[in-house]
Image (tube, rainbow, N blue to C red; front, side, top):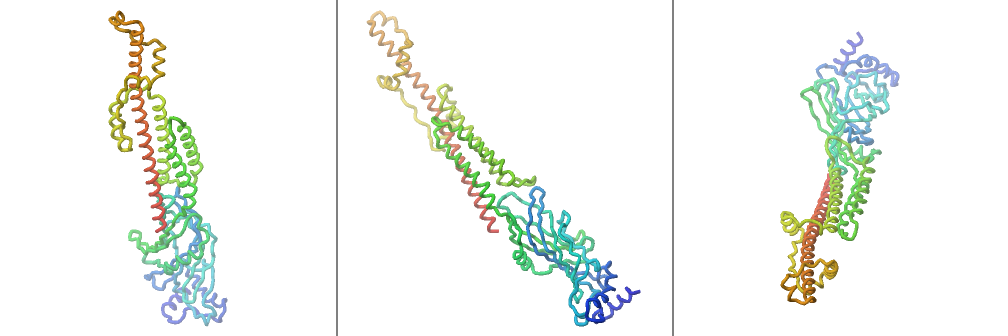
Length: 455
């Protein structure tokens, strides 16, 4: 009976609905007692009218981003305002414009954040502020653990865009309409003014968009949170050391392979780079969605260092054992010596003509003496043995031995020079490939870094 009379009074009266016997909180509380009995229904006079709920928030801190679980953890102060049409009083008659009462005494909208994936562990606020015009202000802290689709391809220069979607959990858009409580510029300004915990992330923008879900008939208010990672830590701890090691490996090509053990130096660099990657593994994001560009960079750096070590082993072998190899195959001579050699600035050397006479003796004296001492001289023709004195026959044998040995030596030297030239061309080609990779990688990272700062 009390509810019926109270509803009729609300529907017909043009004066304030609540009358206070005196301007005190106790009198106001007594006047509000009939409203407490109506806390189970939506506070509208006409059931066909919708309730407007105004939502905003102030972000106090960005607690963390979990790339593997695709989660964003923030701490916000949530502001929700709605009008209770059963409440209205005269501030002069009741002595106050606002009163704070337990939220359990009033109907409260079931506004949720759709992206919420964990329990709110923030302190519970048991009170709401009730205004004389019927507006109820609900301020409460919320620790939001929300799902967010993270794109870490440009890590550590990535910019993330996460969303907070506010809507009623059970009421349709015919019953509850969600609107923005204050201008979005004011929300961003207040957030930047009070934010105390940011860590490695920087808030760059907050925007809002109103949307109605026709499928579920829900009225939604979507906030877009723009975050940018602070990349200085990763540049100093990841990129600069990696670039330094790869640069040292690049300049190791200037070491002569025939006189310096270049392979031992490169093996030391690979070992150091592997240890560096193991130590810095915790700084790299782990996710199965996309592979960060920096992971590809590290993999290519390691692959190039291993390739340069294998190339050094090949070149060292060519320099030290080329005389025992077979002649250079035709396809190697065409592809490497002629085509690739011209590309890297090492064209094939012209074939030297064989020297004769005393020049040969001057060029290879040791080889000739060893051949003569060993007695490996070809036999003289029978005709000369009968007609030529013994001294001349002996001299003829020596000259033929010299000629055969020098021709053999020249043939072996030509083969060795070709293999050494192949080694030099391969060395120059990998050096150019190394230089190109480092240049392109540096330009790409600088461009991505500058582009992320412009956003």
